[in-house]
Picture 1 (cartoon, helix red, strand yellow):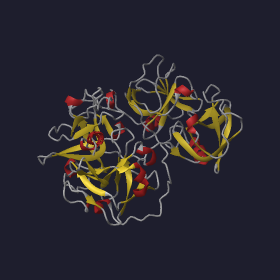
Picture 2 (tube, one colour; picture 1 turned 135 degrees about the vertical axis):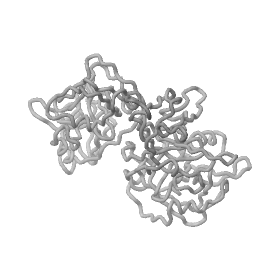
Picture 3 (tube, one colour; picture 1 turned 120 degrees about the vertical axis):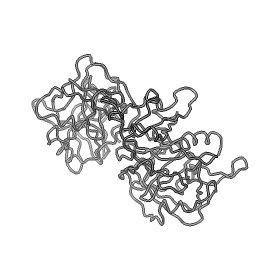
Picture 4 (cartoon, helix red, strand yellow; picture 1 turned 90 degrees about the vertical axis):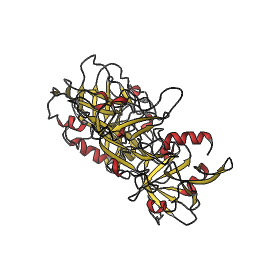
Length: 501
């Protein structure tokens, strides 16, 4: 293994133990290649494949026609893994080394892949089993990543958006033996928090030295149980401050087995969404969680449920957290407004002024004494004039659009605004739909699929308003709402020109 590969591999694999939150909401990118399950039948499980490698450090070439299948639970999306995929089935998990970048575009979390193992090699690196190819580097036999030109020979992509759920475990469930079923698996630990000495730190190093960092977590007041959360300085959240609360931690579990035989349990998160430390710290009297929020965090769905056909003042102390899905720069949203979405729902925030956030920013904000109001068909949190914008606690986050037919969108908008069935504000995607009406996007057009029609609304001030309306069947992404003035119109609004494909 060359020095650069060794460096990145060490940063991304050996140093991490990750609890991976396998949420099926993780993938926005469209995979390359077929997305239906193919006519390939696995003949063994991942745990069965592991039986070919029993001696630590050995290079075991697979000479039989062995085929495995698994769901991608982690990839290189955030930069916290480098040239690696982690796949999982009901028996175990496997790390696959691939000499290519931007693997997440072809192999998003939730995609099933099939691996033709004949000709590949199994080995382990500091106790973590890997699947790659045999090579001789500097005269020494080694396991290396599958060359980019050969990936399609061994890896076949199947269906996408398969459910991804981490395995809820106790730290004592996680073993360090070579064939332990949890090594390289997406796991979830409950009741953890970063130790007090680390809460003022960021996830990793932001200096020019790019040094991978260890942060310790403990089970609340039990400071004797301290697995390591190890994060690459090349991750896109390296400079994000650690949350101060207590809660669940999802990560890929790995180990670091030293030359002395001791093994350190390590957790590698995929991004900051895997760390849900929203509750109070052990021994706290309140206000410990939420990544800096000082009030109890509620979900956006719970916030929307408070609305019962009348504007209200939010007097109960509360905060919300979500990822920005609107694009203020492109001006197809009201000036001064921003839409955020969490795992439950979406909501519009109205500040006025110039919105500083971009798509993918994660923010946490106190909503105590704000107003929850109905404005022209939109449910929004109205902030006081001049209210400060919250700090961005993570960037580059992805919200997966909900794939719906137009009939389903129209039916959703018929539900009460506070109902979980109403998708107003949520990021949605319509497949195989055709736009008609004007020569350009500007104003009201019609968007039609096999199930029905909805208005495609583009503000005349949007930067893409004068672009030609594309012909033919396309994939469309945007936010939905009912615009209420003298009449009520169900609408979908794109964020920018990239939302039609």
